[in-house]
Length: 97
Image (cartoon, rainbow, N blue to C red; front, side):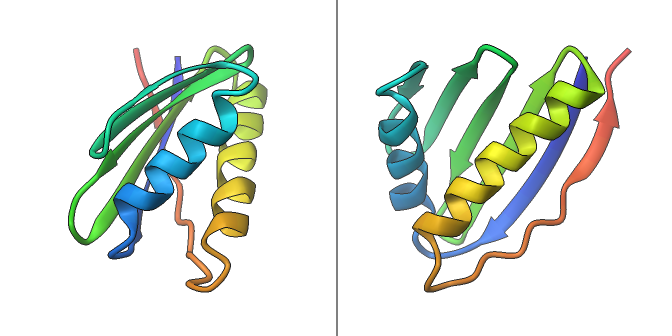
């Protein structure tokens, strides 16, 4: 399993978490509340966690190519939803054993 993580500094973390989950919930399985969420894509998954000042994202997939796709999908949608804040993504890659 391949994994990327990112932390976005924002006071709107819960809003963005819920917006992402509601958006993707029209097409794929999602679970969420105001502070945590999980999105299951056919090619990977994303776990989200919101605090007062940060949105933490963890994407994982079976292959590096699917991980890249999952990361791009999440980042592109969040960039659109948070366009006023222009979020910076610094994905930190991890390879699970």
